[in-house]
Image (tube, rainbow, N blue to C red):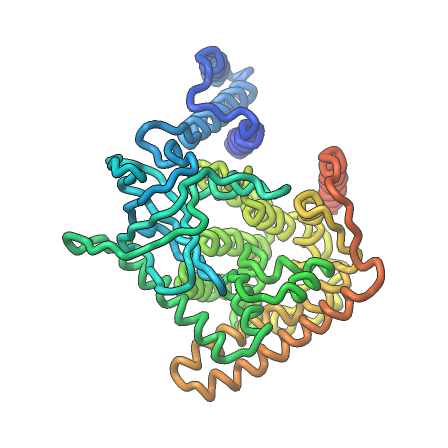
Length: 503
């Protein structure tokens, strides 16, 4: 019990520290701060050796260590331009950038965005700057195509990204270490002097190529808007989705279903687990996890999908084991390692924030809703999918309102109507696409089932969005309202756990 208390103290101190430090990012914090933490840690270490003060000493030591790790993490990841970083030269001057495509190309109907890891820069006057470090996001046309890992020469006006209206585009890009952009770039492939021998780069390139083939086959099996909708469900790609459909999803609170997240991944695993009904409950977990790992690799294993898979597996673990305390601690440790790698996920990544809240909803809120869903059939995991949808919505709706300034009054009904069909669409969409590589008619047969599920979701979104006052614009809501909501939710959960403990 004492070790668990110290673990919670360390993790919560780290998380709160990371959260607060977003407003005070420094490359080096004052020595006074470190001296204060050292004194607190030393006091805790001494207290641990005394039986009467061992508990308080352990908590003080864990708190000092958590805060210290949060400070060192922010110091390590805070970006400061130097003569060797590319953003120093982002002064709206025309340059040639020599580098390597370092991420999966973001292909859209009329353009492609390439993240280029820069090696050297040539200015308009011919001056060569080498070596130069950092990444540039280059916006280029759709053709010719360039692939991950290729050496390229990019030319255009190098500038720093700026906020777009209320969207903090510069902060959004900083999550990936991008601090310079070229909006209208010219690109050409650079011939490498020697072939690269990077196994990991070749593996990722193969995954991205496979994902491109996968999305191309989706477009072959489905017409629009169903093709783009299915790609959004399975790979998180929103390119090509009609604006009218996106508007319907925004109005009805269904936007979350077309982005790969911990929620989407979890309902897929639950669906697979429900189909393995002949196995004992605990034995279904591992085949489901194996399936999701295969799915993750098949659709490209991008950072967002890997992160969503981890969060989704943790959510399923909560549903399978029912041991909330262990799973809660596992989620916090997972969050710790993710933020230790990149704290900007917590600051600027809405997908990460919503995924984390959705998983917490599965762990904490879903058991509270058991009495409400006990009469829903368990066939094919319908009850679990529906219960998870409502739980995720209850835990994430304040942040959604805060981020997007809109409250969908029809969202609970919309999610109830479409929840059973989302896992079916994803399952048969994935199976149909894979089967089409083996025998196209079989893929078409399975895809008809997925198409019917997608059509139902589209109809529900369109019809409900036309209801007057289905959503209201709230603008920016106060952070006090959000804090109040979560305090109330925590109070309800606390009372529920106390009642369960009494029985």
